[in-house]
Length: 177
Image (cartoon, rainbow, N blue to C red):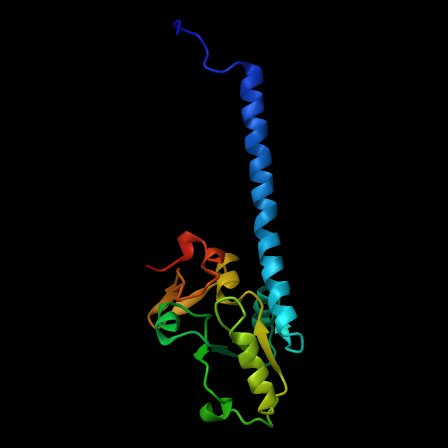
């Protein structure tokens, strides 16, 4: 190669930039599509269960109204690594922790992405609890959207991936080792 010769022509460089831009656009469109597809799959499997989005839950938590009790259905190790602020481990029956089925206390149940929390919400509803919802996308979507996490020591940054078959929804930077 001659000294001062270019590796790419202006036209070749423009083609490379165009291909990279198209690839990036497709990737950016793919991520929300994947979450939407997962959301629809959980909804189809549990059509009668009420749900709430992370955005709506975060907004609710900012309002001066009765706050929901948050139940994490994941394992103790997953919960100890990180959970939503103020969340508790999910009991088999909320009455075990003093929440009477006749009360109108709102309950939001979550897991990794929704496949375990939706049946838990259904079970609580069958026990007589009236205001029960599951968190769409679970803690994986909550963390993906940059929402706060905590553990027993304070703020947390990562989520325990557990044995979730939906691990690919939890970005590598968000995964606890």
